[in-house]
Length: 282
Image (cartoon, rainbow, N blue to C red):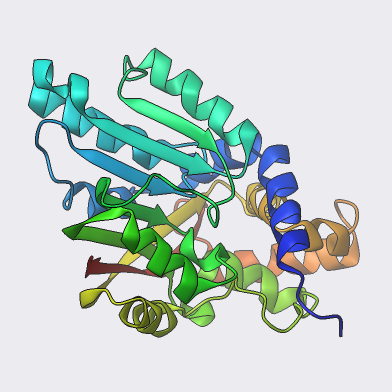
Protein backbone atom coordinates (compact mmCIF):
# COMPACT_ATOMS: atom_id res chain seq x y z
CA UNK A 1 0.00 0.00 0.00
CA UNK A 2 1.31 3.45 -0.91
CA UNK A 3 2.08 5.98 1.81
CA UNK A 4 -0.14 8.98 2.46
CA UNK A 5 0.76 12.13 0.49
CA UNK A 6 -0.94 15.15 2.13
CA UNK A 7 -0.44 17.45 -0.87
CA UNK A 8 -1.90 14.92 -3.30
CA UNK A 9 -4.76 14.29 -0.86
CA UNK A 10 -5.64 17.99 -0.73
CA UNK A 11 -5.52 18.38 -4.49
CA UNK A 12 -7.85 15.39 -4.88
CA UNK A 13 -10.24 16.91 -2.34
CA UNK A 14 -10.17 20.24 -4.17
CA UNK A 15 -10.96 18.56 -7.49
CA UNK A 16 -13.86 16.64 -5.93
CA UNK A 17 -15.44 19.68 -4.30
CA UNK A 18 -14.98 21.77 -7.43
CA UNK A 19 -16.73 19.15 -9.54
CA UNK A 20 -19.71 18.80 -7.19
CA UNK A 21 -19.95 22.37 -5.92
CA UNK A 22 -23.47 23.01 -7.11
CA UNK A 23 -25.12 19.73 -8.09
CA UNK A 24 -23.92 17.42 -5.31
CA UNK A 25 -24.19 19.88 -2.44
CA UNK A 26 -27.55 21.24 -3.55
CA UNK A 27 -28.86 17.68 -3.43
CA UNK A 28 -27.09 17.07 -0.09
CA UNK A 29 -28.91 19.99 1.54
CA UNK A 30 -32.19 19.12 -0.18
CA UNK A 31 -32.20 15.61 1.27
CA UNK A 32 -31.21 16.73 4.78
CA UNK A 33 -34.42 16.68 6.80
CA UNK A 34 -33.35 19.23 9.42
CA UNK A 35 -30.17 21.29 9.59
CA UNK A 36 -29.12 20.18 13.07
CA UNK A 37 -25.38 20.96 12.53
CA UNK A 38 -26.26 24.58 11.76
CA UNK A 39 -28.45 24.74 14.87
CA UNK A 40 -25.48 23.55 16.92
CA UNK A 41 -23.29 26.40 15.65
CA UNK A 42 -26.02 29.05 15.77
CA UNK A 43 -26.48 28.40 19.47
CA UNK A 44 -22.84 29.26 20.10
CA UNK A 45 -22.37 32.47 18.10
CA UNK A 46 -21.12 35.48 20.12
CA UNK A 47 -23.37 38.29 18.87
CA UNK A 48 -21.67 41.63 19.47
CA UNK A 49 -20.43 44.57 17.37
CA UNK A 50 -17.19 43.87 15.55
CA UNK A 51 -17.36 40.10 16.07
CA UNK A 52 -14.97 38.10 13.86
CA UNK A 53 -15.85 34.46 13.08
CA UNK A 54 -13.87 31.96 11.01
CA UNK A 55 -15.63 29.13 9.17
CA UNK A 56 -12.86 26.70 8.25
CA UNK A 57 -13.51 24.39 5.28
CA UNK A 58 -16.80 26.23 4.80
CA UNK A 59 -17.85 24.51 1.55
CA UNK A 60 -20.67 26.35 -0.22
CA UNK A 61 -21.40 28.25 2.97
CA UNK A 62 -24.89 27.21 4.03
CA UNK A 63 -23.94 27.43 7.71
CA UNK A 64 -21.71 30.50 7.25
CA UNK A 65 -24.62 32.41 5.73
CA UNK A 66 -26.99 31.38 8.51
CA UNK A 67 -24.45 32.67 11.04
CA UNK A 68 -24.04 35.92 9.10
CA UNK A 69 -27.82 36.36 8.91
CA UNK A 70 -28.15 35.75 12.66
CA UNK A 71 -25.50 38.36 13.49
CA UNK A 72 -26.89 40.86 10.98
CA UNK A 73 -30.49 40.52 12.16
CA UNK A 74 -29.50 41.07 15.80
CA UNK A 75 -26.96 43.87 15.35
CA UNK A 76 -28.71 45.68 12.47
CA UNK A 77 -26.77 48.94 11.86
CA UNK A 78 -23.95 47.81 14.15
CA UNK A 79 -23.36 44.73 11.96
CA UNK A 80 -21.18 46.71 9.54
CA UNK A 81 -18.01 45.92 11.50
CA UNK A 82 -18.78 42.22 12.02
CA UNK A 83 -17.06 39.70 9.75
CA UNK A 84 -17.66 36.06 8.87
CA UNK A 85 -14.49 34.78 7.19
CA UNK A 86 -15.15 31.70 5.04
CA UNK A 87 -12.12 29.63 4.02
CA UNK A 88 -12.20 26.67 1.66
CA UNK A 89 -9.84 24.96 -0.77
CA UNK A 90 -12.52 24.85 -3.50
CA UNK A 91 -12.93 28.02 -5.55
CA UNK A 92 -16.13 26.64 -7.10
CA UNK A 93 -17.69 26.16 -3.67
CA UNK A 94 -16.81 29.75 -2.80
CA UNK A 95 -18.38 31.02 -6.02
CA UNK A 96 -21.66 29.48 -4.86
CA UNK A 97 -21.20 31.05 -1.43
CA UNK A 98 -20.45 34.52 -2.82
CA UNK A 99 -23.50 34.43 -5.08
CA UNK A 100 -25.76 33.45 -2.19
CA UNK A 101 -24.24 36.14 0.03
CA UNK A 102 -25.07 38.73 -2.63
CA UNK A 103 -28.63 37.45 -2.96
CA UNK A 104 -29.11 37.56 0.82
CA UNK A 105 -27.64 41.04 1.20
CA UNK A 106 -24.76 39.74 3.32
CA UNK A 107 -21.83 40.34 0.96
CA UNK A 108 -20.40 43.17 3.09
CA UNK A 109 -20.23 40.91 6.13
CA UNK A 110 -18.99 37.71 4.45
CA UNK A 111 -15.36 37.45 3.33
CA UNK A 112 -14.24 34.41 1.33
CA UNK A 113 -10.72 33.09 0.89
CA UNK A 114 -9.75 30.19 -1.35
CA UNK A 115 -6.90 28.77 0.70
CA UNK A 116 -5.46 25.60 2.11
CA UNK A 117 -6.75 25.40 5.69
CA UNK A 118 -3.23 24.52 6.82
CA UNK A 119 -1.88 27.84 5.53
CA UNK A 120 -4.51 30.32 6.68
CA UNK A 121 -2.99 33.16 8.71
CA UNK A 122 -4.84 36.15 10.15
CA UNK A 123 -2.29 36.99 12.80
CA UNK A 124 -2.55 36.57 16.54
CA UNK A 125 -5.78 36.86 18.52
CA UNK A 126 -8.02 37.88 15.61
CA UNK A 127 -11.11 35.67 15.87
CA UNK A 128 -13.90 35.58 18.48
CA UNK A 129 -15.05 32.14 17.30
CA UNK A 130 -13.83 29.42 14.95
CA UNK A 131 -16.23 26.84 13.52
CA UNK A 132 -15.82 23.90 11.16
CA UNK A 133 -18.56 21.59 9.90
CA UNK A 134 -17.10 18.25 8.76
CA UNK A 135 -13.83 20.08 8.10
CA UNK A 136 -11.28 19.14 10.76
CA UNK A 137 -11.37 15.53 9.55
CA UNK A 138 -9.53 16.72 6.44
CA UNK A 139 -6.58 18.28 8.31
CA UNK A 140 -3.50 16.07 7.72
CA UNK A 141 -1.58 17.45 10.74
CA UNK A 142 -4.40 17.83 13.23
CA UNK A 143 -2.59 18.81 16.45
CA UNK A 144 -0.24 21.24 14.72
CA UNK A 145 -3.07 22.76 12.71
CA UNK A 146 -5.31 23.20 15.75
CA UNK A 147 -2.46 24.83 17.68
CA UNK A 148 -1.93 27.29 14.84
CA UNK A 149 -5.67 28.01 14.70
CA UNK A 150 -5.71 28.62 18.46
CA UNK A 151 -3.02 31.25 17.95
CA UNK A 152 -5.39 33.20 15.68
CA UNK A 153 -8.14 33.15 18.32
CA UNK A 154 -8.66 35.65 21.11
CA UNK A 155 -7.92 34.16 24.54
CA UNK A 156 -11.09 32.68 25.97
CA UNK A 157 -12.85 32.48 22.59
CA UNK A 158 -14.72 29.41 21.37
CA UNK A 159 -13.64 26.70 18.94
CA UNK A 160 -16.46 24.50 17.64
CA UNK A 161 -16.63 21.70 15.11
CA UNK A 162 -18.94 18.92 13.96
CA UNK A 163 -17.64 15.47 13.05
CA UNK A 164 -19.29 12.19 12.07
CA UNK A 165 -20.00 9.47 14.61
CA UNK A 166 -19.04 5.83 14.16
CA UNK A 167 -19.43 4.50 10.62
CA UNK A 168 -22.11 1.98 11.66
CA UNK A 169 -24.18 4.89 13.00
CA UNK A 170 -23.86 7.02 9.84
CA UNK A 171 -26.20 5.25 7.47
CA UNK A 172 -25.95 7.74 4.63
CA UNK A 173 -22.44 6.33 4.14
CA UNK A 174 -22.80 2.90 5.74
CA UNK A 175 -25.51 1.75 3.31
CA UNK A 176 -23.27 2.10 0.27
CA UNK A 177 -20.18 0.79 2.02
CA UNK A 178 -22.09 -2.30 3.15
CA UNK A 179 -22.63 -3.29 -0.47
CA UNK A 180 -19.54 -1.85 -2.17
CA UNK A 181 -16.24 -2.32 -0.39
CA UNK A 182 -14.24 0.89 -0.84
CA UNK A 183 -10.50 0.72 -1.50
CA UNK A 184 -8.52 1.05 1.75
CA UNK A 185 -6.94 4.49 2.16
CA UNK A 186 -3.18 4.84 2.62
CA UNK A 187 -2.05 4.79 6.27
CA UNK A 188 -2.27 8.28 7.74
CA UNK A 189 -5.23 9.44 5.65
CA UNK A 190 -7.16 11.80 7.97
CA UNK A 191 -10.75 11.30 6.77
CA UNK A 192 -12.53 8.83 9.01
CA UNK A 193 -15.65 8.17 11.06
CA UNK A 194 -15.88 8.11 14.82
CA UNK A 195 -13.28 10.85 15.25
CA UNK A 196 -14.73 12.37 18.43
CA UNK A 197 -12.01 11.12 20.76
CA UNK A 198 -9.28 11.86 18.20
CA UNK A 199 -10.43 15.45 17.79
CA UNK A 200 -10.91 16.02 21.52
CA UNK A 201 -7.45 14.65 22.31
CA UNK A 202 -5.91 16.78 19.55
CA UNK A 203 -7.57 19.88 20.98
CA UNK A 204 -6.13 19.15 24.40
CA UNK A 205 -2.66 18.59 22.92
CA UNK A 206 -3.04 21.89 21.08
CA UNK A 207 -3.58 23.49 24.53
CA UNK A 208 -7.30 24.22 24.26
CA UNK A 209 -9.22 23.91 27.51
CA UNK A 210 -12.72 22.84 28.57
CA UNK A 211 -13.06 20.36 25.70
CA UNK A 212 -16.62 19.00 25.49
CA UNK A 213 -18.74 16.94 23.10
CA UNK A 214 -22.45 16.42 22.46
CA UNK A 215 -24.12 13.96 20.08
CA UNK A 216 -27.10 14.75 17.86
CA UNK A 217 -28.86 13.22 14.88
CA UNK A 218 -28.65 14.25 11.24
CA UNK A 219 -31.23 12.64 8.96
CA UNK A 220 -31.18 12.42 5.17
CA UNK A 221 -34.24 11.38 3.21
CA UNK A 222 -34.17 10.59 -0.51
CA UNK A 223 -37.19 10.02 -2.72
CA UNK A 224 -35.84 6.65 -3.83
CA UNK A 225 -32.70 4.52 -4.10
CA UNK A 226 -31.73 6.10 -7.40
CA UNK A 227 -31.58 9.56 -5.81
CA UNK A 228 -29.51 8.10 -2.98
CA UNK A 229 -27.05 6.61 -5.48
CA UNK A 230 -26.84 9.94 -7.34
CA UNK A 231 -26.08 11.74 -4.09
CA UNK A 232 -23.45 9.32 -2.85
CA UNK A 233 -21.77 8.93 -6.24
CA UNK A 234 -21.18 12.66 -6.17
CA UNK A 235 -19.64 12.46 -2.71
CA UNK A 236 -17.59 9.28 -3.25
CA UNK A 237 -15.91 8.87 -6.63
CA UNK A 238 -14.86 5.29 -5.78
CA UNK A 239 -18.56 4.46 -5.56
CA UNK A 240 -19.31 5.92 -8.97
CA UNK A 241 -16.52 3.85 -10.50
CA UNK A 242 -17.44 0.65 -8.67
CA UNK A 243 -21.19 0.62 -9.34
CA UNK A 244 -21.05 0.65 -13.10
CA UNK A 245 -24.05 1.51 -15.24
CA UNK A 246 -27.59 1.90 -13.94
CA UNK A 247 -29.21 -1.52 -13.69
CA UNK A 248 -25.95 -3.43 -13.39
CA UNK A 249 -25.83 -6.28 -10.89
CA UNK A 250 -24.04 -4.30 -8.19
CA UNK A 251 -26.19 -1.22 -8.81
CA UNK A 252 -29.34 -3.30 -8.33
CA UNK A 253 -27.90 -4.96 -5.25
CA UNK A 254 -27.46 -1.56 -3.62
CA UNK A 255 -31.00 -0.54 -4.63
CA UNK A 256 -32.39 -3.68 -3.00
CA UNK A 257 -30.29 -3.18 0.13
CA UNK A 258 -31.56 0.39 0.57
CA UNK A 259 -35.18 -0.54 -0.09
CA UNK A 260 -35.04 -3.43 2.38
CA UNK A 261 -33.52 -1.41 5.23
CA UNK A 262 -34.39 2.26 4.84
CA UNK A 263 -37.77 2.53 3.08
CA UNK A 264 -40.41 4.46 5.03
CA UNK A 265 -44.22 4.02 4.85
CA UNK A 266 -44.43 6.94 2.40
CA UNK A 267 -41.96 5.24 0.06
CA UNK A 268 -38.96 7.50 0.71
CA UNK A 269 -35.65 6.24 2.04
CA UNK A 270 -34.64 7.59 5.45
CA UNK A 271 -30.97 7.48 6.59
CA UNK A 272 -30.30 8.41 10.25
CA UNK A 273 -26.79 9.51 11.23
CA UNK A 274 -25.02 10.30 14.47
CA UNK A 275 -22.93 13.45 14.53
CA UNK A 276 -20.84 14.96 17.31
CA UNK A 277 -20.46 18.64 18.14
CA UNK A 278 -17.17 19.42 19.89
CA UNK A 279 -16.34 22.69 21.66
CA UNK A 280 -13.20 24.01 23.33
CA UNK A 281 -11.84 27.25 24.73
CA UNK A 282 -8.74 28.92 23.26
